[in-house]
Image 1 (cartoon, rainbow, N blue to C red):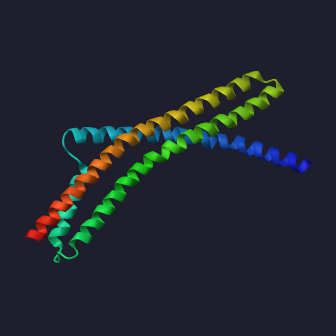
Image 2 (cartoon, rainbow, N blue to C red):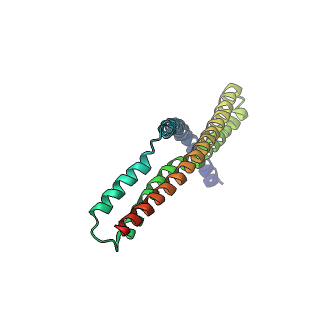
Image 3 (cartoon, rainbow, N blue to C red):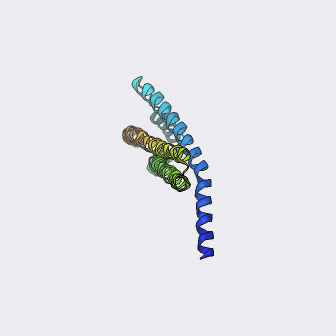
Length: 184
């Protein structure tokens, strides 16, 4: 029985120690969501002005690659490779936002359960002020974790729509460029 009690005590201490990294992670996620929101706002303004950075960068690099290509036989392979590379880059940007969708609520839940365990221990000792403080921490971390997840989900919906549109434009431009090269 003493071994089991020792293991439980170890787990309790470990979970108490995990509260600090969880709270730090939540604070980091809040700043990350704010950063992503700012980047999305900047991109929105640029798109409203008619400037689409990823599509224009792709078109420029593709035209350069087509001009430097001597053989039209492998041109379609080069274009497809460049399309896949750019699509992977755009998807990586989405994955950074999707990370917060999953991690935010998980950290919020951890930030809820850890202080609740400490609060129950405080209640058993009759320390009501410490229990109340831990309950406030528990509910605050839940709200922050869920808010990060919801904000990241909204950001990902907007970004996904733009990525799909950009990929379609890139594919169209590549097809036009390939046909122009094959005719000429």
